[in-house]
Length: 560
Image 1 (cartoon, rainbow, N blue to C red):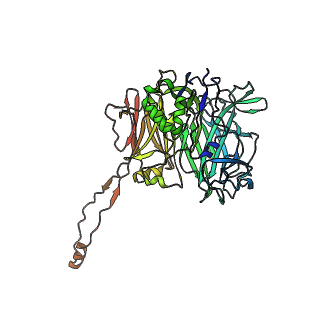
Image 2 (cartoon, one colour):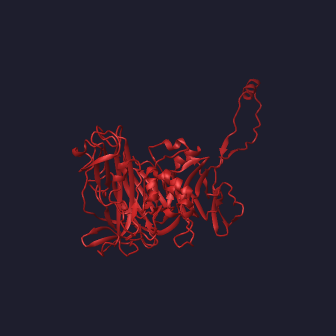
Image 3 (cartoon, rainbow, N blue to C red):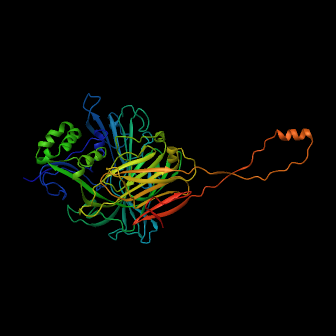
């Protein structure tokens, strides 16, 4: 019998969060036709995770209500709303809105896409030209609910910056999600008692419009007889996206990009101009399965599955279906660690360019500096398939972040090399360590699961000219589930006392001499300027950049 597929979507924060993925979830299959090559051939349990997702092509507003007469529980009734202020949704217990931001214009000046830039063959960023928005329902902005206008993806043309297909077409999707959990009597999304929740995602897709080639052409959308296929950026491409966003976008962002530059400029008391410039990144799919007939050999997986799936576990074990929990951010690290010895890489998902907020069940911890919810504090990016969906933790003076992935790529031979970029607001970093405004240096380490520290082929730290952002990077570390640790240090200021030549007093009258004796004159003090030097240290093919007032190469390394 052909094995059927059952994808189990975990509840995130509430039932209605699942509603936010309408049109994006992986469909259930009744047979193996169309299934990925990594799908097991016998009934199994396990997980798979891939960054390959469908494009968001529409905005929508939905009202959710409990069962008739109920005041709690799961949402059992829905209503489609024409706007967030629609009277038809006024009696809903909760309202969820996904709004795709339109390009900025004379009529739309806040919460909009200002520009897209893509590098040419020489690596120079060139501004793309806005073309059009896809057809679809538009939603008006609401001053009452403090929500933006919603539309559809926008298409841009970069004449000097073709993508891998030779086309100059790119799609931009910047979406924001809003939800209030106590809608009745609630007048705004962002104030109590609305129990407001907010999400944000920004993506750039290189596109090639081709003649419709049938159901398996992997079209992101259709335009008449044309199919919009996602293709790769050109090999040397770099992109920059500039968005006008409200100042409610705070905390940490997560990205699938690398070599990031970030700029945040206030435009008004309520709006910022956010610009993110970066290279696209490749991320391998990962998967792990255990045949149900072999479960007796994996008691730890069985115990984990019982805790993970609760009352559903027993039917999972006995059904004739394969149960794949799919990518669930808050369970991802637990899934990986439970199946770690069985995890393998699948095909690479190439040319990803996205950033946004991340759904997680926890919050940043370890320092009061995380309590400031008024600012955007940083951005984390990695090519690791699995990661904690929360900001880095501050533990024992180090910012720690755990990632995970298979040791090899899909061929089973090539080592999978990790990338990690951390952008921190400079005053946030100084708050963590109690530093002054003097220059900062850093030590980045990657600790493997056995406690050993890996040699990192490349690590770096820089601070932008405006002293607004710190950029830290670690590259070429290996997996399976290492912990990345960043420790910032600052040399103590050096204070030198300036030598003063002795003064021979003139002969004075006794009273004057007594007065002079009782007067103490402090020697002038000069603060010595701190000079930060950088050197490169080599150990075979491994190169480290060391910074400080008197930098020295670590043991085993030689100065280049």
